[in-house]
Image 1 (tube, rainbow, N blue to C red):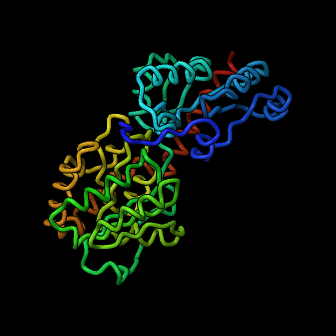
Image 2 (cartoon, rainbow, N blue to C red):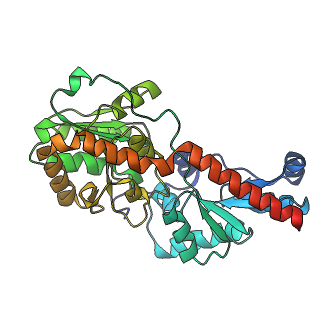
Image 3 (cartoon, one colour):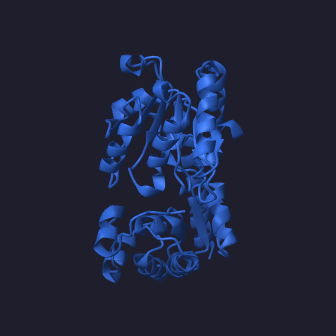
Length: 329
């Protein structure tokens, strides 16, 4: 899964993850929790133990959350090991998942993954929700797109996001000189991606973009292309379909992103460059269908269950149930 990924450990690992790890402080926890009705613990790291214990001492209901999986950690390390995966799952369960009665996961895929690992808590699959601004808009197609098939990818430039695979996949198509690739974002692999981009006949756009540019491209590109191998939901795919942009994604067994596709024509075999190139050839040859209102309407129909309002309503119902049970006890 992470072949040829550089090993990044220790301080460098934390810097690459851009994640600030907290520490346990009993007094801080109890001060923060004193007036609340419910506590939600988001990450299964060391601080989770103290947070859960403090909440229970104060008689507060606790809800756990599942937003990181072992493969995220291993990808950041550049390591693959079944032993390491089992160890990380053990840590996650010890720190959080086996200490709470209720856990919310961002997708059915994520909930099923927890259950398969023997987690006994009540599991609720609730999407993070499509942010309200991601809706179809009246945008002019940028002139520099030309008549090319425009493939858009948005996300952190990291190994597990597999943007390099997308570059190579476009390179292998029959129509590489008619495909415009956009890799919007930044990260530890940005310079490497820019160097690799010189292999393509049409220079890709590889840079960070503003929120305004993001909405513009989501409303004017032809296809959202997502090669990530690790996703518990995929915010970038949800934003794309929110604007009516169809998604083509990797069928990685560690990813929930396939939930955002219309059918198998929008899936490619994880890590398989030839399959990716074949799919891109098909959609270039059928780009009129890709740009049709029929496809857009089908995509927008799929978005309804992921809209932010529905996610908020589901969370409210969960919190009311959890708090109600606590008051009865």
